[in-house]
Image (cartoon, rainbow, N blue to C red; front, side, top):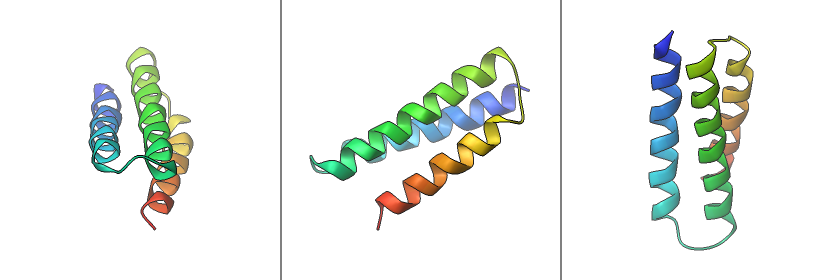
Length: 69
């Protein structure tokens, strides 16, 4: 189930790139936090695949969508 690892890792990389493009401030801090969550999820998925990570992933996606508003 390395697919989950790759999937979460790609989201982490994209979130970091998005955070780097933002100007300093609260949205940038929030985006970096979302990137950290994706990174932690990828590390956990690499150790032991688990479907419970999907709930955490969905919560991070919702938070990321709210940052863009």
